[in-house]
Image (tube, rainbow, N blue to C red; front, side, top):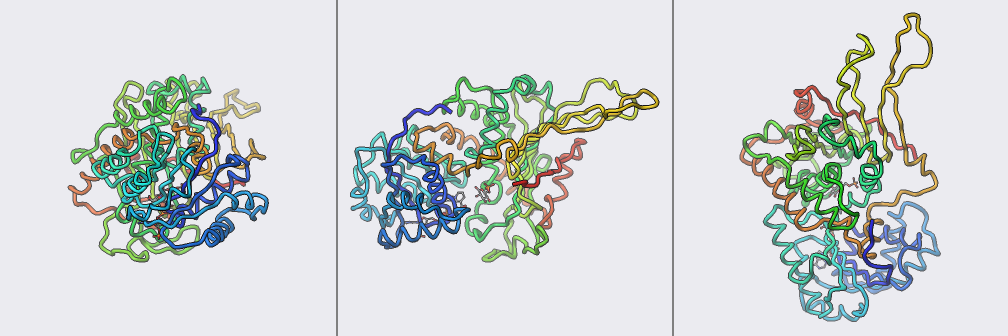
Length: 497
Ligand SMILES: NC(=O)C1=CN([C@@H]2O[C@H](COP(=O)(O)OP(=O)(O)OC[C@H]3O[C@@H](n4cnc5c(N)ncnc54)[C@H](OP(=O)(O)O)[C@@H]3O)[C@@H](O)[C@H]2O)C=CC1
Ligand SMILES: O=C1O[C@H](COP(=O)(O)O)[C@@H](O)[C@H](O)[C@H]1O
């Protein structure tokens, strides 16, 4: 990716540093970047939260988090470098007066990165607080966590509040799927390989499937999740971003706006789903109790703090159509759900069948080629091809067998650790490269499409279809493809390393 700014020291300010995301993902990612010596030696990390802690208490908290969530034994040399960067400020972000001493902790002469790992409802308050310290200038970058808003209107409202103080060039909206190695690899796979670049349209592709299955439930986040549902939590952002990368036209360059312009065009071309077609092209489900990986798990309505009347969806399947020249008549089937049998994310491209069969009656239904892009957990790329079975036959006929060309990242790049998505994204913010962050117009276009589906579901008054935890979702999601003589790809992923 093109990097606009150089490697320079910054003040990295982590708002909400004691929250779940910071503890589980952001602080361990900063530690990994430190280990890889990718943070500028003079960069400072300043945690901000409303608990009254000393810097020593904060350092002890961070150390405990990294030991818990860092994934390996703490490297003392790395920790001592990271620890030397840490500072802490107690701020009630809703109270503008509480920002009074904030500016004593940062150096206005250098770049400041403000990562807002807080509820989006207080993004505006934080911006106002920073403004009150007179430290916002064009060198400040602000990172916003998802989901930005609950619908188009609230999203616009949050974006308006932030853009009162920051120009779009300073705003980095996170979608952590854009930091995953395999999601990034969609760009190289498509545009660095002529075999794909020239076969990537309605002439050659029959349909596309994008599945993001999770085995976890809602992980104690009932309050957040029940208000959001799988549509806002996963489809509005992660699945639509993957779809855009799969479907976009070649960008002119790899700079941020070239890529984002192309993704936006795809989002704009998504055929609207509304009350007239919602029941034909969408399925929503809610898990009931069952077994996941041999363990008994409660249903959604039996989770801690559950409202037993909730009709929030934990599963969504959609047949999406992109109304443009390249994708005319090629459905994109999207599927995502909680409490499915395993955690697996895949993009599967089904190519068209051969127009004519040379291989006789026993191969009447020559299967189409498939390109399987394994996003996680066993990252890799696989193509299924038909191959002659070696050997002689008494009739002289040719025996065919389905075979795989398989690139497994864990085998091909055995010495390389696959970095967590947040490591990549934190590094990109520090470098000042916006290519892997979502522009305001993309977010709003995605909301426009999603809001229309959510409205149609509400109007229909139909409750979500139950599915047992540990299964691949409601029966109707199978029907969504079956009635078009297709079926969901059955994942074979097993993490090998
Ligand atoms: N957790 C996750 O896995 C993911 C989270 N996100 C997003 O990241 C953001 C943070 O989520 P998460 O970490 O789960 O949320 P948490 O509620 O766990 O953490 C939020 C943090 O913000 C602090 N905070 C809230 N209000 C104030 C205030 N007025 N003044 C000072 N501090 C305040 C909280 O402090 P206190 O502890 O004192 O309440 C807490 O430290 C959200 O936007 C969420 O949607 C996105 C993807 C995944
Ligand atoms: O943003 C979110 O993503 C996670 C899934 O992320 P992954 O990297 O583990 O695939 C999801 O569980 C969570 O509900 C959602 O908020």
